[in-house]
Length: 197
Image (cartoon, rainbow, N blue to C red; front, side, top):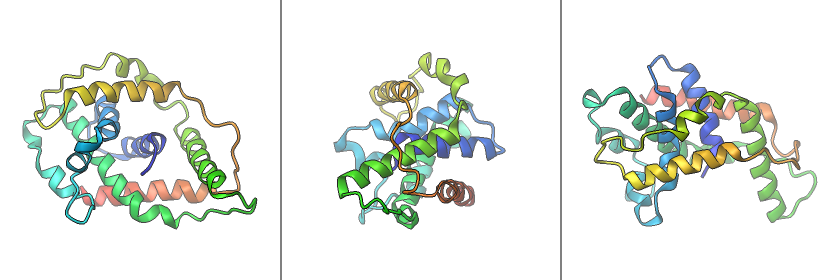
């Protein structure tokens, strides 16, 4: 599954390209929320079907958007984007070509790919989220949505704040995955999710 940095990268592209009104802190809280759920609830939170695939339609239909305010809608939209992107990533990330010209062993290659994706994510995001760091810190975790676990919302806030404090990896093998290919992969996911909405 994609790391938080990739969800944040995808979230930035979504926010920048949508015509809908979005409360950005709520959207970001929603896009990270599913990764803070405990293992026992993973299946339910990710709306998995009997084959282990994410049923994004089932997730989407459990909310009555006409009754939600902007903050609630933005959170749910972020949550939807998270599970939709996880399903996209599951079936499409293998299309990214990994160039292991350095003949790294499996452990080194895995760490190298993780680092290069984080590096590209951070480069694409830049300072985009700097303005909302304080808003996330002060975020009211009581969204009044019966479908959500308030303890996990608090954990989400902590996870995002921790992410903001982390730095990009220093040792990156730039030749492992071409930057243009990765950026295109993320942007293509945005174009597909817009069709699903």
